[in-house]
Length: 165
Image (cartoon, rainbow, N blue to C red; front, side, top):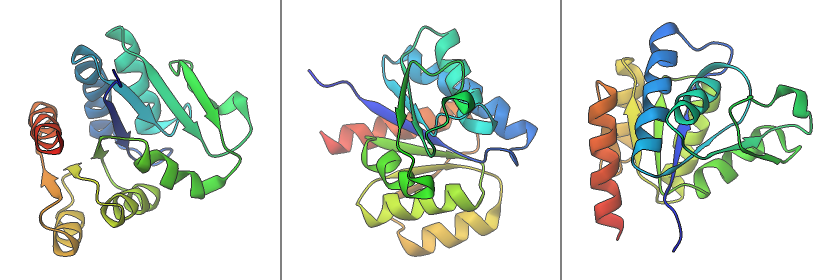
């Protein structure tokens, strides 16, 4: 039976402290559900924090790397997929997930949310930037869900997964 894969996307170098805290908790709760965590795989920002949270809870982590440089992979990534595709790997990230949580917002995260919507995927926005929420809900109200905390984000992911079965 295929395992459920949940993507956590968010800023790398520009992640703020609340994004990192939320990402770590998301990783823990994703692992606690028995889901696989998929991130951008690097050792910075949201992707690193989420991977560390999942590993701390005994979860399986996958990282889709933008480069061929394995020195930049998070120590908490179990399976590193090397693409050498730069930002084009963002499409692989979203297509490989059953649901996506955008934890914080940056240009790369925005591209992943947009690609997810273009591909019919549902996205939970765990961000406090009203501009991001307004923009993405204006594009696709039926597949954007907004959470103000990690527990709500996980509850929304569960609802998304129930709909897709």
